[in-house]
Amino acid sequence: MAKKFYITTAIDYVNDEPHIGHAYQKIIADVLARWHRIIDDKVFFLTGTDEHGQKIARSASEKEKEPKEFCDVMSKKFKEAWKALNIEYDKFIRTTDSDHEKFAQEFIKKVDKKGDIYKGKYEGLYCVSCEAFYTEKDLVDGKCPIHKKPVEEVSEETYFFKLSKYKEKLLEHYKKNPIFILPESRRNEIINRVKEELKDLSITRTTLKWGISFPLDKKHVIYVWFEALLNYLSGVQGKDFWPADVHVLGKDNGWFHAVIWPAMLLSAGYELPKTVFVHGFLTFNGEKISKSLGNVISPKVLVKKYGADSVRYFCLRQIPFAEGRDGDFNEKALIERHNNELADKLGNLISRVSALTEKYGLEKEENKLLKDLKLLEIEKYVENFEFDKALNEIFSFIDKCNAYVQKKQPWKTGDKKVLYELVDSIKAIAILLWPFIPETSEKISKTLGFEIKSLGQIKESLEVKKIKKSEILFKKIGLEDGLKKGLKRGELKKGLRNGL
Image 1 (cartoon, rainbow, N blue to C red):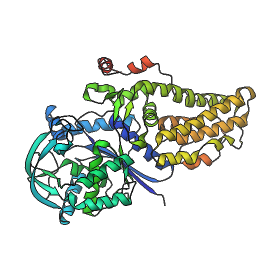
Image 2 (cartoon, helix red, strand yellow):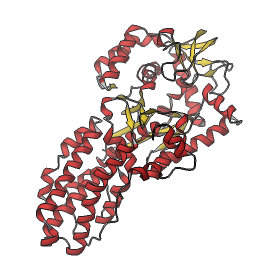
Image 3 (cartoon, helix red, strand yellow):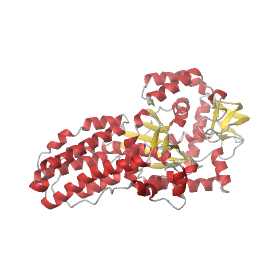
Image 4 (cartoon, rainbow, N blue to C red):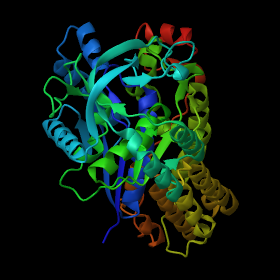
């Protein structure tokens, strides 16, 4: 039987347009989902949008729309952005979906039956942008530590979840399962905070109507964070995928996913996910991602300028994801990698070899080049979330293939056996790169006359057939032209003002 692999991303608030920061996380999850598909696992990849709460209600009001109407428009924009980047999810969940709403209410009843919900009064400091409460010591200069905005004082009747009850169970789980929170730096931060203090969580609101009705008291709606986390369960109802293998999320969501979420699951009697991976934030050309950057940070605009695979490749190759540190989406560096690695190394290899093969043909031969392909190391790097190192190893093999062309000079000898080794090696490269740059890999496989299905195809001998010269996979980009390309009137001026 195939091993199952269930991966999720954080679901995105629809109060604002999708940007490259959102896209980074979805690209990572898509790579993992595709990788597990080609190692023959049974995969389910869930993403979607978070559509309840005060922040959404205010954004809808500003646009003079009803909340659901506003969410319908914005959710579609996220779907379009992921389509542009070739993100192949199995389900796009919306927290306004009726089956999610029903699941959330049933989950509340399970937690209440456990004796973990009680009525009380909450007084505290609330950030609307985070949809989260903070203590005085959490604030930075009296403002939200994430959004740097003033918090609001809130006092209202609420129902609480007995989060404090699960303090010791959580600490025990962290100790027994060292990969539950990754990377280690995030794990240490969260464990230290749990050890320090774990307060019960307010899980309802009375001052807000845009949310899922609280089944124990119709005057209340469920707190957006409590019900939004449930998408990971409601999204796979009736499917044999739980528990999740990896939750991929940003560092602003770490506490909710690594503390509140497992406590909720323990209360309701569900198995805990295997890994919660907390990654860093992106800046854009050295500047914090914000509304002032406008469309220049839109995934669709970036794909129009550079192509989906160049955007994907840069995010994966430039930023060491496994370390969980912040990274910079720098367009100048992207163009350099596009030209020097994708065009000069990969593109040039495919172009030269396919042209020579069209001219001279192939003759089957043992592929001695494959001995230089460090497949086990590449697999280990992906398993450890070290995508930059996996790509570095693949491109090291591409370098060896290019050196082999220079050494054997098949344009002089017309050696069909040498060309067979090179074409068979390119087949392996296309398969290995498919999770990272799928559009290009599929173009290569079409040129070679095979369909990418499994990593096991690398060990299968290439069928000898007629091959035609490949199209140019990556056209060189001039720095100045690249930065301007695809921008609408007014966007370039805005972009330059913000560091382009």
